Length: 93
Image (tube, rainbow, N blue to C red; front, side, top):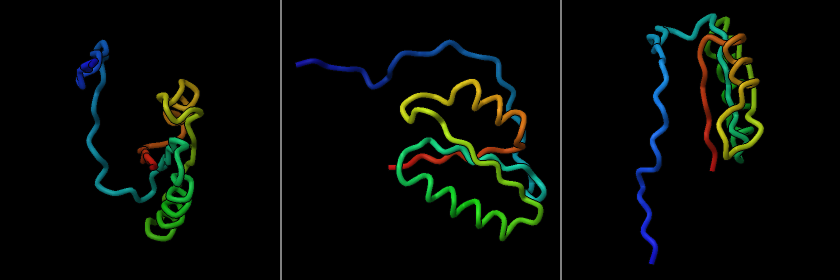
């Protein structure tokens, strides 16, 4: 029998600054990050439609990761940095 620790390996810490949540999404550029697992594409399409209907001036920006089992690549992260104010990340299954 092989026992495995559920703790995993600790990653080196990085310097990150957390920002306050916006009081409203009105007028913001809203990133919709798809992790490519089914049925996230359908969930995000519905969410994008609802955001446009309910939040004046909301500007959804849809983007997908390349590989569902890996973190978003540097190109995806840079695109989010340049094009959005907030991000909604969806996880399917």
